[in-house]
Image (tube, rainbow, N blue to C red; front, side, top):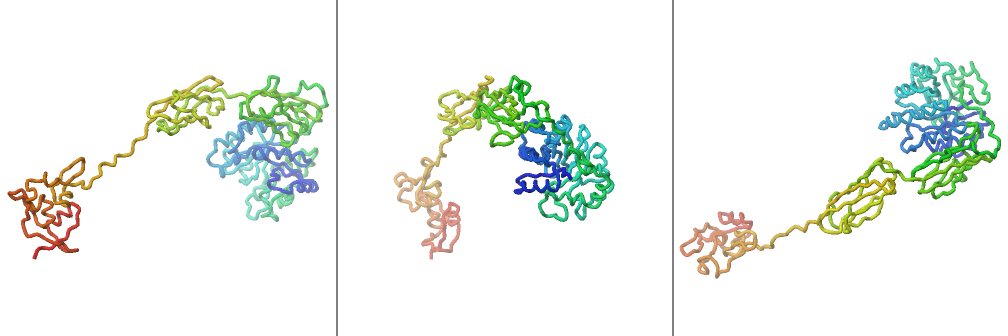
Length: 547
């Protein structure tokens, strides 16, 4: 039997090697589906086992960190003749609702790749059946609808355009509505899958799933009857007992050893250029193209300029694909050599991006003396490498400091300055401007006065008061009112506060009360016009009338 969809990765199975042995003992073959870069690599490595094939692809829930050259990455993996499908790919609107356009773009590009190499696709579809169906109709591809759970009508629509339906452990669940759909389908329309380590069938539901549980799906009532009606002999491992071709090509014999390496190449006679900081996938062109070529050793003439990583990171051997990373400017030679002494080389030149246009801005636009501002380059294309920028400032009064983005520090009070930014590759320049301002002085606290109000001054001192430098001060007796020392009360306020009566100015220029005075105010009681006046000027007041 063949499990057409499982994820046998070491992160799920610490005992994976033992599991693979058990699968062989039970005559179970598997197609291990990758979901992103690392699981794709692992699925290909696992296909070194006789009973394991690989499917490689980018699942719609794994697109956050997808590589820029993901199609080249996948295409490089197709050299291995045990990569039999592109998958798991598709659309998922249940877990990912905000990146539909990205999902659709990646889905279509992978379908184009499958069509180019005439490979089947393994489709992931969740809450997106309409879009999945309409997109599949646009491409000349065939394959499997993984974990199908739709209606009979939708099943027939997918079957009409060349797809089979993946049936897994869900069919054994008590309330599964898929049972009625399966009963109406032909054996040729379905394939078996476990989706291990997920969706464990009864009777092991609740435990970690594995392809060893495939038998419970195959023996389920309805599925078993169909299998018994039509048994297909799996010649050369290109068909399974449920009637699905797995499209595993029969590998050609490896080419004979040859001293003539002119027909083997990696990147053409002219070599390639790669931008500093970027990665690129390389794979040699062997003849025949589908020969077994997992015995390739990769090397680079200068690891510091371009580093290289094949499927086995310890010795860069084991697979006819390698990823190179440009670390610094320079030119090096990449070599790929098989155990049959077939050798191919590639000249790699590491370059800087060319800027189409460049400008900059300073944040903040106005910089306070002693503070710093950040120079922000603005250039097209926006994803260009900017390791080659040079900065210059208009005046020595400003100091440019290299720290990621450049910073400038304002060293003098007031004025304007500018920064010129230059791309040393293209020679293009841009200028940005900024102003420098001096921080404002501390606010003036104003005069320190004993009396801000002349009424308060007169009431408190019993003298006439006048404003001097913003403060109210008592006038000396020698320079006082016309009454001088002859007066008991030199001001109206003093008279009112002291007597508790209204006061008038007499013929001598003195203020006199209009009624009997109050003396010795106690702690409480009293009232009257005089007290009201003192309260108006902010002083407490209580008083008693004379006996």
